[in-house]
Length: 378
Image 1 (cartoon, rainbow, N blue to C red):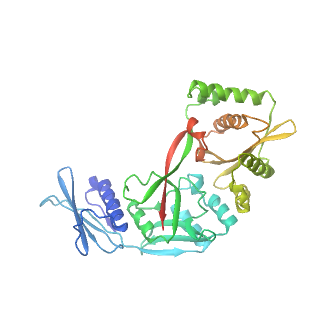
Image 2: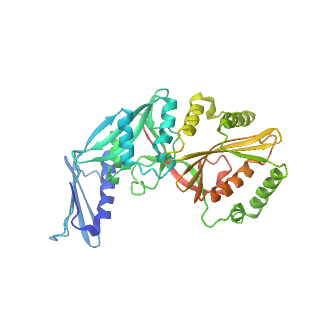
């Protein structure tokens, strides 16, 4: 049961809960003065003293606030127990309860596409009490790497913890199985958790489209040389009279082929070497239509396929998910496609383009970086 009597200090109390839970669960000492059974710390806000008492049990937290003989008082107590769910149908019910579904990687269909392709066993960690479900950590067990990671594999991005009370995030991690690898975590929920054992991950890159009428408006925001080079590439491809096809999903095999050929020329491996990855994106396309919409853009020049992009549309965001380009025969085709997709996203009424994680030595020059984090539990 949760009772807030002094509502002016709710946010402050929640922050304290987060910090206290974090320090306890990950063994971070304050000053070496903890007493057996309880840990006590004094903080202040607006000339009031905050006295915190924590029972050593991880299942219950008690906080009292007093200013000398002041009658102001706030108590928060959350009793919970952990439970692990493997049944996929029950996992979906919990997902529907906790997920906001406002982001591609928060949709059940996109995650399940990867789960179906890789066939990893779901491992959903639920914190609950007799009144309600409190928090959920949706994981799967990767048989090949023998570790736990996000449900739907670690390909997911800007992942958020599912919880009704942010202070429970450290408890989710405390009860999570080992070894655990959680990548590309959104920093939005973690601002108050400086003590969490997290590291910076590669950022993701986005383009805010608000106020843009087309790609030319975007180009005016760039440095002169970058603007000139992008226009030069676009004009070069435009003179070749490219033919654009929308939603020819059978071109996925060509997207894979072009991507593999490009990276092979560079002497680099690709994630397409694993056939399960190809199957995952086939299923992403198949599951389109409920929580997101898949969109494929193919560009043909003469008798050659110059490039293929797989895009996902989810709410106000245009996700540039996968691509394959023939840069050997059509240099500048990637820049041409990016400018085309800016126009395409604007026509479709989208507010931003998400170019996903990792710069590949070019995204950082043109788009805004969004920090992501990772947590490892060995």
